[in-house]
Structure formats: structure tokens, C-alpha cells
Length: 250
Ligand code: ZN
Image (cartoon, rainbow, N blue to C red; front, side):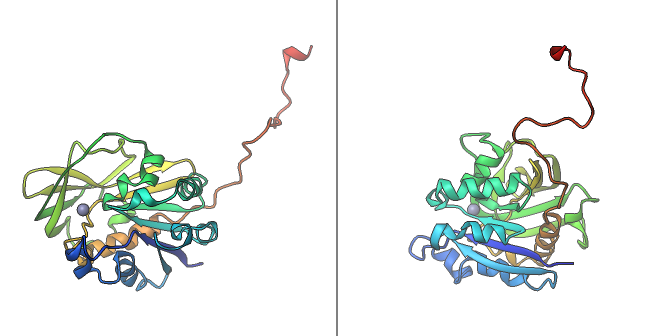
């Protein structure tokens, strides 16, 4: 079987504004994520970022991507509308599926694909414990996990009610030390494509170093591999398969 072509995108880290993030990810988050993802022999991984031409996501890159992982937070509004449309179309056409990571749910791509469901969100950035429970134990994304929850000693809290449309599937629900909960691993079908939202991933805590989360992310990439369904005719007036007795033509 062909390898899954994975593109990991991130927005870059400003060392002045985000000293704690740059300390954890001196080469940016996409490089770090690619580092463990490419240990999977069935993946072919590359990194793109916002500073590259066409925000790193030219049509040629999209055409060569099966699964796009999107990490953005502060600078997502600098991604051009043309690039956003291009990515959204590729997902709707089922050519490339999408993982929205952490604040990526609020990206222009996320909002365009999923709709805007709230004007604001609950969050708290104090480094509290997050316990992420497996809700759907038959979902491919939880394959091989060692126990029924993941645990992050220091995490950022995103809390319910959270600004996202009702998902098709809820795979994880997180509980936070401060008391809140979050649907923290969920998915949607969009057109011929699929979107997975994986919430943990704050840039100031070493969340992605968690090897169980790394396992979840590899599973998620495999689950997001596009399916080559039948070609569908949409455009123009469509001829019928059967002969239709059309009373208007009498
Ligand atoms: Zn964050």
C-alpha cells in the first residue's frame, strides 16, 4: 500500500512574544510533530509553515497531501482567504482530510468548514492536570492505548460549552483539575471528507511529548486517510439511468 502523505503545518513562534513556547519547540511545532510521526514506516511526512509562499499551502502541496495537520493560534488570520478556500475545497472533495490541533479549531479553515458556533471560548492557562477519557473504545483512533485515559500533568483548560458544532463522533472527553470538561477528541464528516479535532496541544506545556498522545495522533492520521470513492457527477443537467415517463412531454 502507498504511504500516507502527511503535511504538518504550523504558524511559527515569535521568540519575543512566546519565550516559553520557543524553549519547548526551538524549531517550531510542525518540526516536533513530524519528528515522532515519521517514525511510522507507513507515513511520508513533510512540514510547511505560514512564512512560505502561499502560506506554505500551494495547490501543488495540497495535491500531494493525504492528511493535513493544522496547528495555529495567534497568526492564523494572516493565512490568505485563497489558501483557506483551497484547503476547504480539497477536504470537501475528499482529496485531503484534516486534523485541527488545539486552537486550530478556531482557524479560518476550521470556521469555514465547521461553521462558527460561538463568539468566544472558555480557557485557563495555569498548567493544570488534564485527564482525557476514552469515550468510544471501538474507534480506530484509540487503538493500542494502554489504559482508558491519557493524563497530562500540565495542560491548558478549554471548557464546555465549547464553540464547536455537535460532532458526528466523540472519541475523548477531558476532565480538568479545575473542574471543567471538554469534548477533546471529536470528528465530523464534511462532504466527501473528514475532520478530526484533537484539543490537547498548548504550546507552553510539553503535551505532545506524551507517547500515548503520539499513538493517538498516528492512529488519527491513518483514520484520516482519504477514501477513493466512486466518481460522482454533479454539474449540469444529469441524464437519467432509467427511462422516465415525463408527463410534460406528452
Ligand atoms: Zn493554547
